[in-house]
Length: 117
Image (cartoon, rainbow, N blue to C red; front, top):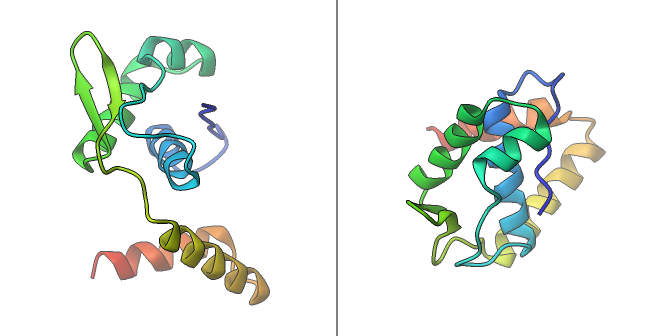
């Protein structure tokens, strides 16, 4: 699994890491019971603080996507995969946003606002 971050982004790194895991789940690249890379390994590979990685993993735990287990690390939780229909709806939404010239940041802000209503 490839975790990606953009150091130039205004999105906090821990949120970028969590989003990368969510995206991999949505694509079906991760399954229940699979282990995420160790926090130390991710921190070293991306040259970031280990606490940033742990914060991302804790965020995923709080969403019910990951189980944090002492000695086993971060493991994808049962039932964490997104429905394929949801992924298709997201693709359609992104396609429509592109056709209308709506940027990714604006689309994310609109989704966030709608989701928190």
